[in-house]
Image (cartoon, rainbow, N blue to C red; front, side):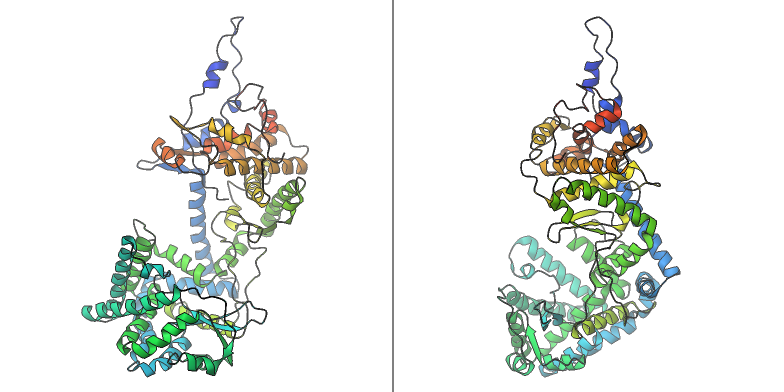
Length: 609
């Protein structure tokens, strides 16, 4: 599901006006049911009456409310876990969250954390100190220049590879475009803010920021070269002769690693490091190592560091009008640094056995209905709230509720040890707290998040609405698993005839993929519902279609709708309802729509029906 939608204002019902013209005998033709003229407006009338567009807003939508409710649910879940952790996994999450979300604790522990992480770089007086300083940093839980990983080469060979640069992509350092030069200037200013907050005077901080950028630019040039094939493992002594001054052996000794062979990923990067180890001034190395430590730990330090981090992350890197709030940044950081932990806890807390069984029945039935049309649909793996992702063994990891910076260091040490012992690292499941359904063609997996198993996708009680909302969206995503070829091409002309906004038509060709997936998903879901509930009464049958329409309820300004339809790959929400439903004979039967009425196609288009 990327069930984020676009909708249009209420329509002039031309068909209704035509139907009300006097007949040849002078009598009026009976007025068609409103559901048969514009089902989206009919089904969502009550919602719109209850939800006027807020002043100054361009849109309010049912799915936007769904997203907001999911965010509130995340906050409640974290509060419950911190207050009453149920198991060792939740204790880890509770301590990590408590330490990182309390400004007073972060401020109180900042000075001690700084002293700890800056101690190694402070001891670098000459370049020949670099191996010892790197070993101390790595043992502490910092990986300033390189990190270890296991290769998927059948033997699980141990490898050392580059750590990301401060700006990530090497092109940000090397390309001449003005916007990239501006980004580099903003990054330099960010480094200077962090270095000055760490105790350097303004001139020293500026010089240290420039030194950091000089070294990172040299490394970016090396990373921009094609690394070629992965080199074979080499004896550690030989690698140290080839790349002197990096202390590869000293670092592995500091980590108690019994490694005699090592693969160096991206040899050009390590060549550049070895050259810099001999040529760069020791003060430049000291500046780089200090900056790398501050970049890593800034969110877990005092207020000046956290503010600088939020400003750079939010305004510069993401282009937001204001920095994300601290809780959002912490949750995002947990997903990057502790992949899977928050999701495992959320999947367990939010999805009990009855809810899981209910959702799984809908998904399996929809898949079975699709597989009856093409067996390839049956080969898709359904990952319901993490069911297809192996749980992580978190043993050996400990966090303290009053030491956010220390927790980051403990986490990195734990991760390094798992790599060195050839133990599996955490696998990040599909995000549990973001309401979404998504088909991944690479793994042929249909993932459904825990947060999706709530209204309006699943109602308070089982029934037809489960199939009309969750089932139809699952069918939409599932339809992507098998090429549609020339199926449903009549949708191009159909949607070309729809009005997206006054004077603007829907682009049937650009929106074909989404329109076809909507119709296919409804075909699968209706077949599954009819098979599972052959005796469903009229109310239940209508409830199926009302659930689909309810997903797309919204109010939006005409200007926003016009702007979106210039580029959108999805039709406006009105036509995501009326377009596919008008092609389903089951819909016309459920609402008594007659031939000639807008919601009953004379020659229905099909995809997989």
